[in-house]
Amino acid sequence: MSDEIGTRVKKVRLRKGISQEQFGEIIGIKKAAVSKIENGENSLSKGNLLAICRQFNVNKEWLINGNGEMFTLKSKEDEIRNFFENAISSNSDIAKIQRKFISTLVLLDEEEWIVLDRFMKHYIYSK
Image 1 (cartoon, helix red, strand yellow):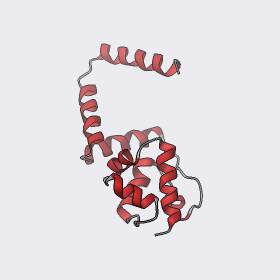
Image 2 (spheres, rainbow, N blue to C red):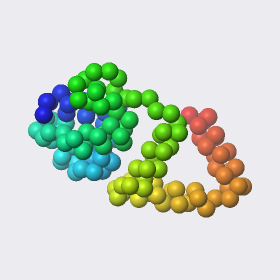
Image 3 (tube, helix red, strand yellow):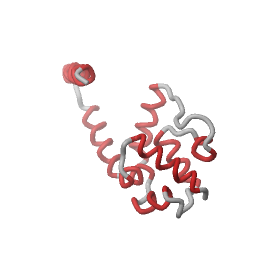
Image 4 (cartoon, rainbow, N blue to C red):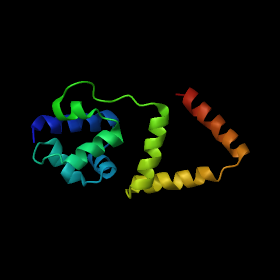
C-alpha cells in the first residue's frame, strides 16, 4: 500500500475531528490498525476502503489516487438513509447508541416533537 493512502486516511479522520479509536470503531477495526494504516505499515483492505467511503462520504477516487475532492456531495435524504442503514447494520458501540436514540424518537408524540423542534432551533441559532 502506498504511504499516500494512509496520509489521506489520516486527513479524513482529522477533518472529521475524531480519534483513531473512534474512526476504527466506525469502520470496524481497532485503533492500532488505524495507526498502522495511517503510517503506511498496513494495507487498506478493500472492505475498509469501502467502509471509509460509505461511513464518511469520502470520494473513492480521492482516497485511492488523490484525484478530485475529498468528500462526495449527498442529498439530505441520502444522508438520513445512510445514517439509519449504518445504525441498523453495525454492531459498534456508536451504532448501539444510535439505535437507542432512534428507539426513543419513535416513541415521541406530536407535542414532544414540537418541543424537540424548539430545542433544536434554539441550539442551532445559539451557535
